Structures are given as structure tokens and as C-alpha cells.
Image (cartoon, rainbow, N blue to C red; front, side, top):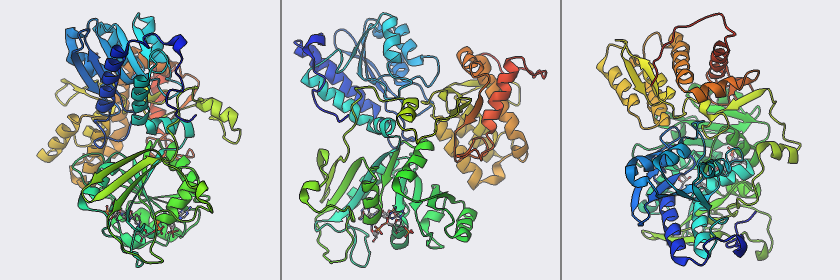
Length: 589
Ligand SMILES: NC(=O)C1=CN([C@@H]2O[C@H](COP(=O)(O)OP(=O)(O)OC[C@H]3O[C@@H](n4cnc5c(N)ncnc54)[C@H](OP(=O)(O)O)[C@@H]3O)[C@@H](O)[C@H]2O)C=CC1
Ligand SMILES: Nc1c(N[C@@H]2O[C@H](COP(=O)(O)O)[C@@H](O)[C@H]2O)[nH]c(=O)[nH]c1=O
């Protein structure tokens, strides 16, 4: 399934192959949508990148938009809002076929209602359950839909299509390989060393290059290092580029022979997970847990198992900042997709000085791994060389669905059909997530209805509601105005951790009720969500969050799954199976 330029060129199906001018314009707008789609990178947790440009028949841009975070307005909605009346008869350019996190085809409806008559789609959605749905829906509403590589074929279109594949490479790789997209990054001297023989490595690359690394960190769900890098460097692994997204820090250690004091054990700024082998230094595991570090035990610590584990936890994109030993193991396991090498014009020498990649078992140069789509960029005195180790999988033919994958690989246990798991908003039933973009209206202490952007916004803010301290009121207001549910959760959790005195004293006993009322509102006021919930009758609902063991179900069913339970309770109430009638706590929006 390697990406091959021009592989799908077929003059038979080409509508406007000889209209070079029109193609150049279409390609330029798609590229603009690609650029827009990347704008949230570093500010919010990685998510599919959506951008939308609306161009009038005279070639003027009427409106633009991009998805800022999961649970915020779709790019298409923002673009038509910006375009207003100028959208009538205009063309919408989308780098990626819209998904349907809302459960109600919000993006498609927005384009249709705005009077868009043509849509140009860069690539179809890589996830099987979403693939082709929006294209079909738009066509059934009478829009002309041109998909690059299918309806529009030419060299310029293939280049534009390729940029669409690259900007969503993490999602596409993840969908195809069932592991998160992984980037190996290292800084080395001109003579190929990542540290002096002593192990000292601060610093090889320049400050400008290191700032660039902070940006790469901000675009990742997590940073991974091995135990030896913790022992030698005592790294912080934070994205020190402002108030943006802070990735998880992950340490892989087989021995658990780690220092008692380390920057990574300070979880006030960012969280840390240590992944180890079952049974390794249990007392030290307990010690780390007492500091707020999460410890995960796997049967055998190999890179593929670790990546499959983090795939199941919903991770999209991971940055490996490890030394050569772990890097070699990760490359050998086939889990590294891309490389970023910062090369500094310095020579350190040293026969035993560490190098970026350890033993791969290759003996002839013909076995060397060739990078694809290589980029060269000068950053201050350094050179950044980047490229893919594995080509971005092409989307044709169709990526098998999860079910089909299980059928192909019988060693993978299929989910039990009676269990419906949900977690990320882009997954099937993603609208059940508290991060789904459905505003609710809830009464305040004076019984006035207040609109909250999502259930998560409301839930996080209630931790501080009613506390007689202006700082607590500030927390409520701050959370209320966060742009995304993810940011609301980040602020709510960190304020709770850092200022427990501002949390209402009855929070632990009230939080389930707070959540229940918010969910009741959400599933009452959106008929399509209500139908979706009722359609699951007979199935067990599980929030597949492996790290939130209260609201989520845990990796192996060890979580309490309170979110799933509340949804099932509501479902049963809506179905009239429960004799308890609860007061309606919300008004229609
Ligand atoms: N310039 C740069 O960009 C960087 C330089 N460095 C330098 O590299 C040196 C450390 O290199 P290195 O020891 O390779 O780095 P790492 O610590 O990153 O990787 C090796 C460690 O990873 C753990 N590990 C877990 N699973 C595996 C596995 N399946 N295979 C192999 N290791 C696994 C082990 O920890 P445990 O022993 O605890 O079980 C092992 O010791 C330091 O001098 C550091 O300064 C490091 C990162 C980046
Ligand atoms: N030495 C070296 C790097 N090393 C990587 O950065 C980590 C330290 O990160 P932090 O503690 O957050 O500053 C270190 O453990 C290793 O993973 N990176 C670079 O860009 N350039 C460098 O010269």
C-alpha cells in the first residue's frame, strides 16, 4: 500500500484532465486547506487535521476554518460562518473527508445549508466507519463532489493529494497499522555521536534546534525515553513553548533500576508513565505511584507491545527521544514511521561514544533503510534531516475495518459484540464521550440557565462551583471559557491537583450526580444522540479509557466505568424501563 505518485491516474475517469488552469486553482485551495488544518498543532492534543476553504465562482476566498481540537466546531462550520451569504454557489475545499464526531452530520449539513454547490475533497476519511459517508451524503444532497485521485487526476492533483496524506499521516498510519504514529528524533554530532563517551550530551544541537524540539513535543501525545536516558540525562521532556498541549512522558525500563529522584517524577507540570515488565522491583513501583507516577506492567517489554498498548489508550502520535539501544529495538519492531535527525557541525570522537541507532543486525549497505520524502532544513548552525521510514499508506484500496483486521489476524481477539466501547470522539459512538462537541444548558445557583460548551466543561467547572473564594470563581470562569473540552479538562485537573483548597468540600460525594445531570441534559436535547443511545439497548457501554479508572473501564475491565454506567442508567430511563422519574434538569437550547 505504498504511496506512489500518479498510481491512480486513469484518463477514462478524468473529468477535467485537460483543464490545467482549473486544476491548478483547485490544487492551490486544497493546499491552503492543508496548511490551515495544521494550525492547531501544538496547542491541543493531536487529532485528525481538518481544514476548509470556501472559494466563490470568481475565485475569491469567502471563508476559512480549521478544527482546533476534538470537541470544537468543525472546520466546515467555521468556514461557512465566516463566508455567510458568499457561500451560495461556492466551492468548499476540504483536505480530509469530514468525520462525524457529532453523530448528526454537522459538517455536511453546514455546507448544504450554506448553499455550497461543489465540494473538492483531498482524501477520503481513513477510518472505515467514516470512509465515504460524507462524500455520499453531500452527493445525495445534490452537490458535485470531486475527490482527488478519483474524480480529479493530474500531476498537480497528485501533489496536492500527497500533501493531504502527509498532513494526516499519523491518523492514516494509525488506522493501517493499529499502533500510534511514531517519530524517532535525535541530535548528533557530525561524526555521528549522540553523547560523549562519558554519556554527557548537553548540548549537541543549538538552542534554535532545541526550541524546534519543544514544538515537536507539543505536537505529540507522548514522549518516550529508555531507563538509561533517565539515569544519564535526568530529562524534563516538557514542551516549553507556552501554554499549549503538554504531552505525557513515558519511560520504558525493563529493570526498574531508576533513580529515586528525577525530574520526570515531578508530575506537577506533566504526567509520567513508567512501563516495565511484570514483577520488576514492585517496591520501587509503589514508591513511584506514591509520587503520582503511573506504572504499567506488561508481560514482556518490547516496543510493539508498548505501542499496541498506547494505541488502545487512544494515542495518535508519539515522539521517541531515546538513545540508540531503544531506538534500534523500536526500528527493528517496525514501529517507527518517521525520523528527525538534528545534525550539529561538531566533532566529539570517542570509540565508545553512543550513536543514534544501535544494533540492527544488518551486514551489507544494500540492507540499509532508505528514508522516503527526505527534507533538509537549516536551523541556526544545525541541519535537520527528516524523512519517513515507512511510506504513508495509500488510501486505495480501502483500509480494512477493525472487524476485518480481526478476521485477517485470528490471534487478535474480537471485541465481544455485546460490549460497545467508546473513547475518542472520532471513534464509533464517539458522541458518547464527554469531549463530544455538544453544548448543554445547566441551571446556576440562581436557577438561570447557563450554556456550557461540552459536558466536560461543565463537569470540570463544578469542582470549584459555590466555593466562597474569588480564586475558585476564577477557576469556574476560566474553565467555562476554555476553547476545547481537552483544555477544560487540563485546567480543571491541574487546578484540582495544585489547589485542593479551592475544590468544593462535597465534591467526591457529588461528582456522580453532577455528571448524571449533565449527561441527562445532553441526551435529552439532541434527538440524534438520544436515538444513538437507545440504539445500543442490550449492549454494555464502556468508556474505554484505560487511565481513568473511575469514569472509564480500564484496560482489562479493572476500571469502575461510571460514565458507561450512567449512560446505561439514562438509556434505561429513556426506554421507560426504570420506575424512577427524575426531574428534568435542563432546558432546550
Ligand atoms: N542526543 C540525543 O538526541 C540523545 C542522546 N541520548 C544519550 O544516549 C545515551 C543513552 O542511550 P541508550 O542507553 O541507548 O538509551 P535509552 O535509555 O533511551 O534506551 C535504553 C534503555 O531502554 C530500556 N528499554 C526498555 N525496553 C527496551 C527494549 N526492548 N530494548 C532496549 N532497551 C529497552 C532499558 O532501560 P533499563 O536499563 O532501565 O531497563 C535500556 O537500558 C545517554 O548518554 C544519553 O545522553 C539519549 C537520548 C537522545
Ligand atoms: N542532547 C540533546 C537532546 N537530547 C534529548 O533531550 C532530552 C533532554 O530534554 P529536556 O530535559 O527536556 O531539555 C534528553 O534526555 C534526550 O532525550 N536533544 C536535543 O534536541 N539536542 C541535544 O543536544
